[in-house]
Image (cartoon, rainbow over all chains, first blue to last red; front, top):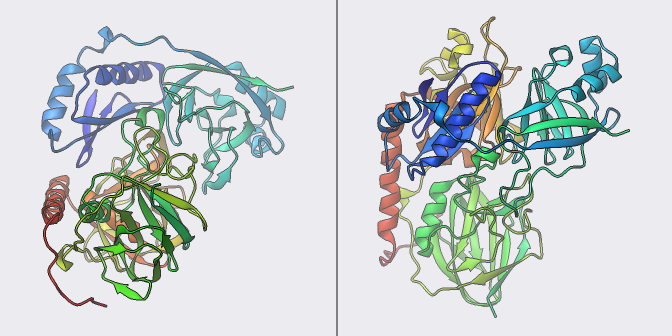
Length: 214
Length: 327
């Protein structure tokens, strides 16, 4: 674990540099531990694949003070208690207008379209983090036989529910938004409700399985 | 009945904002804060309140009609505004009489301006904030920009003394914008030469603000940054702070504003917090350049800025000095 300064009022707690289940476990434990501290000087905790970003109130603390404290508190992560993960089944319409990049991905991977779908549905994914837009789950780990690069220039608008892939990740866009990932399908399931806590269908550590709509 | 204010013309773009939504970053909810928070602080001081819903407006022709006497104020971009036919001084509060029309004729410096009222505009509070998340359509007025005919209901309308912000506390907002930056987590992904041109005094390239800009981010045009051959063009997605400058595969910077919690492109730099309000005033074709500082300098600049906010706050309740309307 390394703590690094990011901005005047932000630091990163880094557990690794690759998408990896062990790194994810540490991030998740660190996240729940940070929440349990109930510190008023920590105003935002954003866990992701390999790190936790902490934004703090610099009127109440300093980088040095907080980094020392976190180094001490995060030394023994194995004892942290966490909520059990939920499993979500997500039905997807693949290809066509729903997934304009499916044929590109198939070509890129030298597979048939149905093989790409089959492999996308075969995995039980882990929610490594939630972000980009509210409720967007970053899911891994994608079968390496169906990986594709991000778009060099992101699309400015894609519909809500779009399912995308990029490198070893897959994800679902909860809202109409810009998108830099290859879009292979779309779901009708609502992923975020601002009126109902905990707001996001998916939380870090949850599990997801995709099911093709026939 | 609560006083009502009718939007007669929403200008190019206007919406309800406040100082932002915090504490929900783990489920991807961004702050969506007003982009010029300093201008908002000034507005709150003029209106003697804290974190009420405000209007963030782009463009001329913005018009409001009042059906009751209301104290209002305008800050942010310098505008030529009129209450009926009387010109209004920038960064002041004023009394709009029942039946009067507030019209912004022209924006003379900067891009976004802010209008607030003594009282509280009725707006949708979502996850602890009134600000509009446009992408997800929540907060503000039904999660959408203001449109002609919208009615703003003013709850808790209050009577206060009018006041003004002295000129020395009004920042400059004109192009070129010199933005101070600190090295970002992936600064190392770029060649030394391209970093030098990006942020070193005497070398730095001027970037142009492209037409591809909104409340989420600002894309710049200019000489692309060059990735080192071994550096990946995208990163494992990670949390970002507002003001992060991301470099996608095409090498051209995107300045991230207050609408994202996570990013997947290399973060070459972070704009100093003290300079982030300026981002509200970058408009298409403006010129931008970056100047590297160390984080301790960023902290010092931020402390200075907070002192100016404290100065603003000390004005509250004081009698405005007499003087002619300028501009």
